[in-house]
Image 1: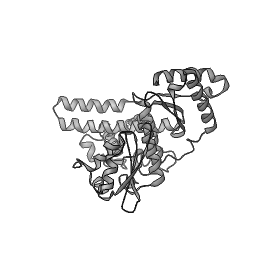
Image 2 (image 1 turned 180 degrees about the horizontal axis):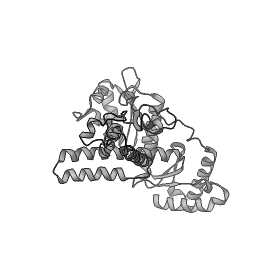
Image 3 (image 1 turned 90 degrees about the vertical axis):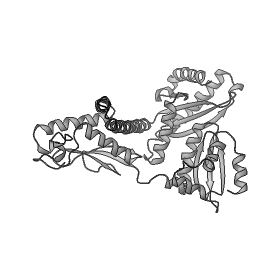
Image 4 (image 1 turned 120 degrees about the vertical axis):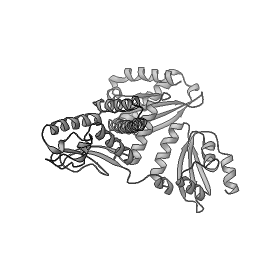
Length: 363
């Protein structure tokens, strides 16, 4: 490692920020974020036995670095997303498969509806699609678990008259042979649709029951398999919540204490940051702080219209939405969801009251 790089790393601050790794030509090859910059960057060069091959390859090419400080860890996450989107660093691309988008589609294909996994939503008329999901392996594992637990893992899905081999193994209810099993199958498909829409947890309960039954039989291998299926299904449902939350294009006020003397105000529409500023809280009265934040919220949210809703649901938007959603659901998040009617003149009182409560909780 060059001496100049060693010195840079040693002098990095222990504060939130984003680091930009460069190669010998000065090209930015990787962008990352950190709560403590120095500790995170040092981890690439020390105690690196557990690094993946891609990370080890990245480290071999690092000759210099830049960094950008942020006031909060949340900002560092968001800035990382923005810089990756703008700069498209080589190793960020290598560490994320561009074909990793996956969709689950329910299509009327053959004698009865089928579940399909693809890199695009099904174009077939009348089909239902869910996603995009950023891990194909998670999608495949979840669908496998759902099919197996519901006994619709058919090995001859296009058959109408002959039951498949999986039926004899107890993995298929026999819809491939026609008759009453088709009605039972269609009822299961409705359950799956309700699950993916977030309206039912019966399939999750079924997976949990199978896992517990296997554990009671001391069949720990099967129990572990259903535990993995459950984890994959929960991951899909979480991603649907993130996408749904972003699609609602909510007005979000985030207020983060920085050092006991100031706070960071961030205004978000959907997954788009509209405005951010550092406020010297100690120099302002509670009424002044409320007035400043309320005025900024009304100005930016009213002028933003549907800015976030018009964006394509790209990987970067999903990543941004994930960061925002996870922050809002964390115990450390101080935020306020602002209904559109509070931005009108007759909603000032409600907005001011809610803003006072937010400031009291955050500071």
